[in-house]
Length: 321
Image 1 (tube, rainbow, N blue to C red):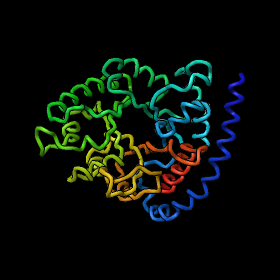
Image 2 (image 1 turned 30 degrees about the vertical axis):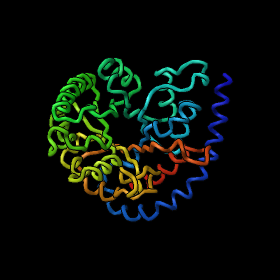
Image 3 (image 1 turned 135 degrees about the vertical axis):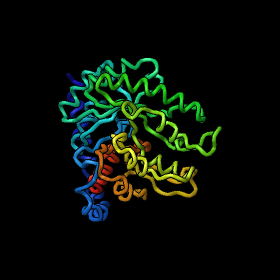
């Protein structure tokens, strides 16, 4: 039982250090909150279901464990958890944590599992096992952050769509939704048909009854910068019910970067989130999930990535209020 006491000591420390960041974050989003208040009643991203992709705090999950991290995220105000693996350091419990134990921690902290990123190889080789895990954790979605194909041709993306249709039908049969999360490369043009955008091939050839999308808003704008000619919001506006999840990742414009933007804490960048939210329209509900790939590099540490999670939650809440 000694590890339980140790976890609570760490949590108390993290609460104390993370709490000091809230006032600064609140001040930084006051202007954004005031601007968006008039439109808040029609926003399609609910402010009471803000989620987090655990990849953002992967260093803390690994070193401190799910018990400490989930308790701290619940204290901050997150409601939805998107997984990026189900493991932590074996030194915490003297063994690996189980899925059932993770589910208990979610329930004890009033959190919901909204989805999980698994490798495309897992979907290909262990689909039913991944669906079993999703059901045990109580999540309604199961997804992958892999590009549909590593070959940027129309034929390869059509073949990938066929695979996703099979996996998606299996997920639907279990009462779940299969989704694909984009990076920027999906918005490139096909090497064999340079006028055709790969993302459009995947969207057109996947069955909307069985295959869904998680739009990473940051990477979509990077795609727009690298391969102009599309509006990220238009994809959602045209097929709103295919996008149950968003990654709300912020970026700061940087002309010296090949991506056009650098990943930053939410609220510290200049991606046009207010315009994006207005332009997607109110026809469906999309769960907003914060992700910051670079959060584990946040200083000072502690609180590190949990400090970034705290400040970013405050900024997202301010945007949606």
